[in-house]
Length: 316
Image (tube, rainbow, N blue to C red; front, top):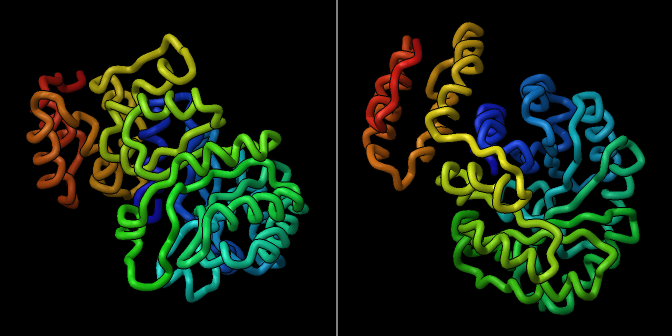
């Protein structure tokens, strides 16, 4: 999610779940080719497994960006064909590419030719006045013919005009049954579902219907303690379960390194605001971090003060 799942967010989420596949923010192919690669592609070793999400519509550019990204050791390269923002559309990539499955296939094939790891696609069920029951199977057939075997499908249309990106996440109706049906029609493909999913109960329900995976965005971000902490046990059957307080302690060394390198506390703690969602003291935790972490000299003392709001002890 753009402006959300940066490297600090991913490090924090990895503390909570060892098994979940984490995704970067979408990065455009031209930015990778011409921009600050260390800033755009750099990540902490603790993040693995982690996927890089690319945006673009030029096969040559995407191939070059994939070749460059391969040197950074990502576990997967994902082509975004789902983002509906005006800025993305003007570059002719994101959800607008649902109208051009042949071009998406060409892009995917070019990326595969340069990638040592799996290339995947994230898409919508259609855009604007397209009929999803017709468009989606055609899209899957054409793009999978290029070598893509794994798709994450946001179970909503995207409206390219008239709705903001935020509205496109909420207003178009969800069609979960269509995505489930695609798994029956394309059993050879690995299909994950995305869109409006708020609980691990729903995740397990989709697994029971035969889907291979579930992508969570806002639910995992806003309530990481209720979603990611429980995911390894409930979805993968692992015994390990970290407490919210232990998760804060596990973040301390990373925070110290970030501060010593000249970073600011709020760059990390903004992703931790929802950790105690629904727990006693959660409001105080959020208040202390929101009010004090932006200060230029904010350090671990602010984290300790926030932790005290939820009954935590300062580290010795």
